[in-house]
Image 1 (cartoon, rainbow, N blue to C red):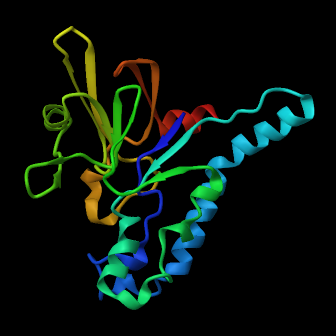
Image 2 (tube, rainbow, N blue to C red):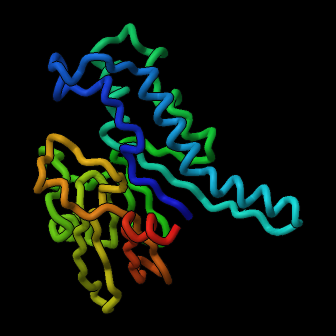
Image 3 (cartoon, helix red, strand yellow):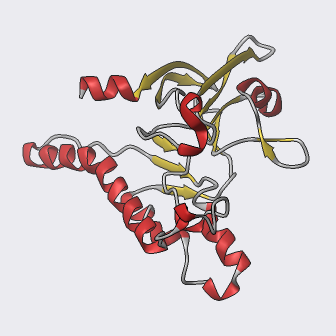
Length: 219
């Protein structure tokens, strides 16, 4: 199973944070869509190539379940439509093409639970619906193993159910190589990578974080 926790598409053309600034000039929705589809093709290419080899050799294909929970950056599309109704049917999530690459796509902030582990772009705390600020706060909110993206870096908090079963909460929201200008020199030092979960059983699992630096060095 492969899980993408959202914000795969950045959608800078629909950003409200730097609208009107010099840096905003030249941004286009179609360019964002093209970049997203090109990136997804790059991500999935090794699986396609592996399966092409398997077909030639008569071996079993690799067909993992693929889950994608939309992030707040993809949600910019729906927010733009909400603010300007004439864009309905013109700007759509479907334009990103995720389902064509085999992903099960879940709406922003929907919670997907597999083997008693909850996945979402982020988990909210309080009545304002703000994302949990830490893995510990997320643990106290969810009361179960849960993994979120959204926030850069890597945070891990653990606890136990009444029967002693280990529960783990993780926030791991950075899997890219570039620096973000708004974060500054110190903020861009955060961890970047993927998570591998082994021995998943009733919400308990063995965690293996894998950094992008390691992946680049090995592959």
